[in-house]
Length: 369
Ligand SMILES: *Cc1c(COP(=O)(O)O)cnc(C)c1O
Image 1: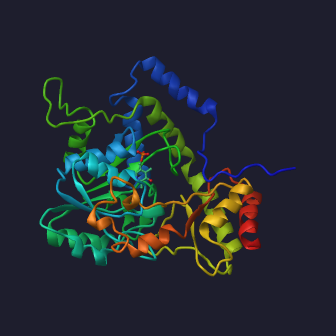
Image 2 (image 1 turned 90 degrees about the vertical axis):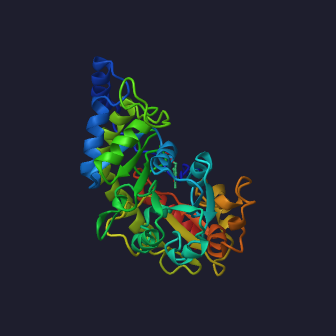
Image 3 (image 1 turned 120 degrees about the vertical axis):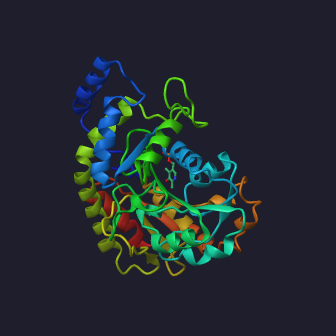
């Protein structure tokens, strides 16, 4: 009998009957969006859960990135990583800013702070790093550069829900930090996102920006957008939060299972994480080195043939897409580490419903090579 397919990720859906009371409350109130009860409760619950003070919810992470750039009035050039999901740079293009790609660190796979200074020009206004796979950036080094050159820092924290470093939530770093609650992320509201703000003033402004810029019925104080999270999405978030710790525990076990199973396999490197105190186990990336029995793409195809879905996150690099590849900073000579990692990376299946037998099947296919 053929084995059932193993997906790379799968959202956790709480029992439907637990969602119904939330929906009944929404039906009764007739308030579907624009900061209703669910929205307010979800904001408060998130602040508490994440250990942050101010949060502004959004309808997705990409609009949240755009709103963050709008709030900080980012223009000109923005230093960012090519090793991310394409929305990171796309938000800069939508804002009319020019992405300047800087290479990543070979261990953290995040923007390499040592290479940032050389990319700064008089037009540079901001840095947009990504906590890739939820692995915290070198936030101290990035802050030192930003302070020295008076640059804004916007963290794309789409992978970093619940991650903590020595200072607590990594979402507290930077001028603003942006989350995504997309269905493929470790925490989901179907679609959704948020901006973590350092003070009540910037939260208030972001609340205006996501509602077309309306301060009140008659005043518009910013060229805002429609970035509002609906009540049904907020309710899903409240329900998901109840399960989050339990889901992370299961992810942690899967992570440990992979680490044991893949230990000592030559040519398989598991990127190490140095600044993490609390992990969210959102992804399980491995690097397929040249001393492994086959190439990354061969392994990807082999697993696909076995109904095991993995992801080549992030391949191609953002800088290789047509709207970016003409930029001087997009050349692979400027990005040797990112170019190399992008051709070796493979993200293995990890999600709470994955069973140990499934994990073993993935490990077996790799070990057999
Ligand atoms: C998912 C993701 C986004 C976009 O978030 P959406 O909620 O899907 O708009 C942005 N950046 C990174 C790194 C992501 O992984």
